[in-house]
Image 1 (cartoon, rainbow, N blue to C red):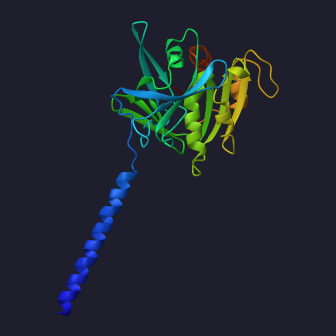
Image 2: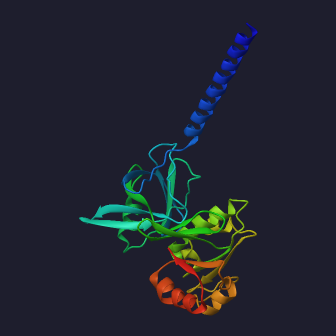
Image 3: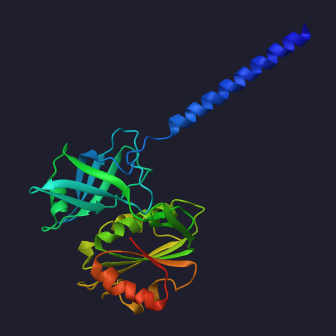
Length: 284
């Protein structure tokens, strides 16, 4: 009789343990946020807020499919926006300034150019209008602790770890840099050292300045340079070799320079200099 009761107790305990395991598994599954982007589907996201940041720059907030959704954009990647404008399909890439820590919405900070078809189109949207987006796009992904993955071809990629990261960004090319910087500084265990050269025409052309300043700390610093304005504490010329030598880490196996900006800055100026100096570099 005692043996029978012992078996019943053990069976009850086993059943309880199984229920606890199932409950924990259900909780774990519920904690996984639904992801918006799938690499294929085009999603129509609704504009829910707009905030003007300067005479030609604004922050546009779009809702995701539900208040529980995250965007699902790996650090270093971007989305493409699309719209039919004047009877023609226009596609434009943008890097959101929000991340998967932000739930239910996506923010774009966009400089509106008079000749820019997509930026002007987005600027004309009213609250409640939608914008078609697709992603993730891009060949560079940051996985934390200095590890970058670069797509080399279909189903092929290469991962390398860099302890020191230099960045050269021009104008709105700052947004993918901001992604990486924020991901590094939010992780206590990520000791990657980052130095940013941020080039703009004038201080009024800077976007994301407050967000960047909030990230400055032990492993992140900024050097601004302006090409059409003299400002104390900032460099006052175009990016050149002397500037790179003085403000970015020296070439080495554990160093990489990230680039994003207009072709005149990236392709015509920086890449030839970096190659001559023997730098590793990645261009968004």
